[in-house]
Structure formats: structure tokens, C-alpha cells
Image 1: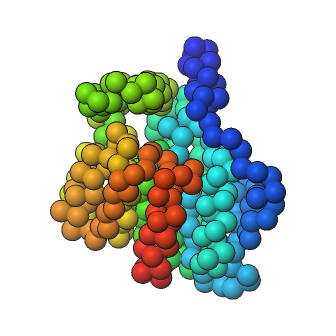
Image 2: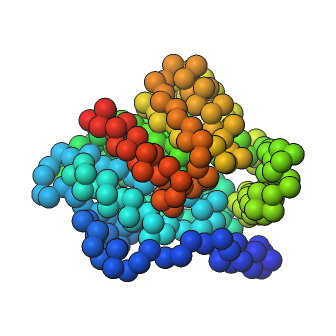
Length: 295
């Protein structure tokens, strides 16, 4: 492993982090996570299970895939989001702490998401949920990985997913993050700093030539694959350089024949749903309505 990449990854992991959620808030959550490793592959998939079923059988399973630029792990803010959904839907949630780059570069995390979804579908009876009610909930990098796993499933069918949520998806990794800025953005130090951060994420995640792989850039997926996607919700943020590609990707999915709901939250920034800023309450309610419509 390249030591320079490890050092850069550690620097990125420490930079720009939100403060931890107050321990009292975490302790008061209606559904608490249980940490385990699910045997979906040789390593075991690092998972936080939140069981809101109250003992009911055949409830839905939500597989949550956190953001973090493919190099940062899940955070306690994911726990807050998952706990609310688990209680609201009386659902089982697997909050996946998938493998990270550069220790596990592309496409390791894509295959791990495929593995855990396949494992879920094959072991639904064992865990007591309805295998026809599996939802993938992806945020930022996690939404990219969800699309990659669905693409792999078209190559080697192994599971059925009922619904897909894509929050502020990085859909096109071919474009240098600095080229996604407009002239006004270049005057904003925060925007240019974020572009540099995203550039570093990609450098750590994959080799430059891999950006044209459809598992890395879902915008390149064929109409045949996109047409086989489950019903999809795409959320974008008005103050996010990924807004344009996220909406372009939503249009591509729709043109391929999949039912798509797309909503731009004009006054929000990247990561707002999980980080609970901007219009996060409206976004969370949209998530709930979308899921409820498919149950």
C-alpha cells in the first residue's frame, strides 16, 4: 500500500468532519444499533443492525449506504437517520460500513454492496424480513455504490430490490471536480476547497483510467440496465456541484423506462439529508413518502 495515499486518506478523514452527535441524543434514539459482521463475503461485512420491527415478521429491510467520498466510514449521523426510519416503518435496517479506499480501492466496495444485498435476499427468512421489500438507501458515495451493485445484479442476477433512494449522487467520475465549478464558485474559497477534497477522494478511490468504468460512473450504464432499476427517488441539492449530473442521471433512468421521482432542494448543500441541515426535514419526509408508496 502506498504510504503517501494512506497519509492523504487520514488527512481527508479528519478534515471537514461535523461534530459528533450529542451522546444524550444517541442514547434517546427509539432504535439502537447493534454492531456485527454479516457473513456475506470472506471478510464479513461490517454492519450496524437497527431492528424496529417490534418482533413483527415480514417487515421491509432497508440497506443504508453512507457517504464520505468512498474513503470515510459511516458516522453517528447515519445512526440518527436509520433509527428514525426503523421506528417509523417498523423496519429492519442494515447500516453498512463498507470497505474504504485506499486500503480497498475501486471496485471493492461495489462488490461488497452487491454481496450484502445478495446475502440479504438469500437469507430473508432467517432474519425475518420480506425479501420482496428490500430497499437500497444511498447517500453521496453510497448512492454511487448502490447503482454499481444493481449493475452487477444485471450481469449476474441474484436479488430483487423494491426501491432505490439516491441522495446527491456522484454519477459521473470522468469530470475533474474543478471543472464542475462555475465562475462564481471559483470566487468562493469553500467551493474550491470542496473541489480539492473531491479531487483527492477520486485519487484515493481509483486509478484515473477507471473513471470510464460504468461501475464507477453510473451515468455510463446502458438503457437496458437502467430500465431494470427499481423505482427510484433522486434527491439533489441546489448548492452542490453534483446537482447537474444527478439530475441528468435521473433523466437517463426515466428515459430508460424506470419510474423516477426527482426533487431538487434549492437551498441545501451536499450531504444535507444525513447532516440535518438546510431542507433536511423536507427531504426526510420525501424519503418516507417514497418508501411508503412502495410498501
